[in-house]
Image (cartoon, rainbow, N blue to C red; front, side):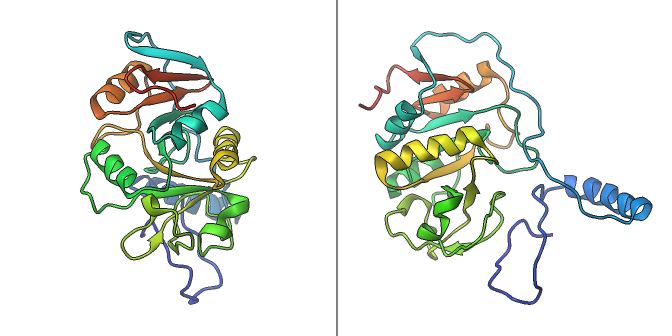
Length: 247
């Protein structure tokens, strides 16, 4: 099954798209079918943040400043064109970063789009997904419902969002509510207070061709090799000293 959908096609009244649209879908679908057979119920509840916890092993602190997590401070860094790794709690299940193992950046510049694709070692034309406050999504995108799993295409309505607008004028936004992901919601709220826009670039925090980074020492190695300006692990903000903090 395709990992995305265009809801403008009205063939069905509604379409359920599993959040984990990769090979795990076969195993999950088999389990759901068995549940339906034995219970008559085929509906399951999803918690996409059910992966492994992050491993806080020892890291080399040379060239790093460590600050207690201050959402306003991170928002200022993002608004100052810093690219930040973002780690909170357990990692996501499935193939997409949904705000627990993400790389975040401001959404306004084509140069940011190009930089993120260089960091990710991807072709320059590849799209970068936006993450948006659920309450504001209709202000920026042609979307009038929550989309927490980055599965639906929509037109971009806000011309300022150059970093997340694909060549055909579309994006595939993730919406975030306070209940769904409190830390990411708070960061988006702080970024909106500074920029007027509750939207960020969101791409996955991983080495090319591998799963999510889930160890502090691996994250530091990645940040230095790929050119991140810093990263957040739960309640701490690590800033590489070559990337001065925005005021």
